[in-house]
Length: 102
Image (cartoon, rainbow, N blue to C red; front, side, top):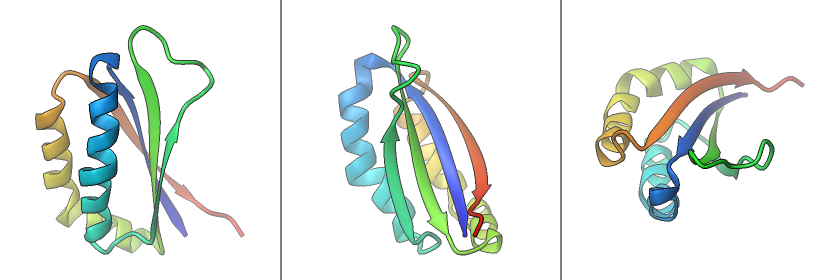
């Protein structure tokens, strides 16, 4: 099993609206691609949020690395562009890929 983790630091000025958009629009759109079996939205508690913003991690679970690669090639560019256009200059993001060990 593979976890695709997207960590984002969001400016405080858009924080509440961003959380709602992620819950109601973006995450459902990612899940609708059919590549993932589960999603989880987390808020970083430590280190605590600072003046610059609040940090979140969105985790998407898929069955194998091939499914993730297909998502990254076929769906991710448009979904990431939608997020970037909407919140341009108000966030920082990085992505990691993790393998769940038995």
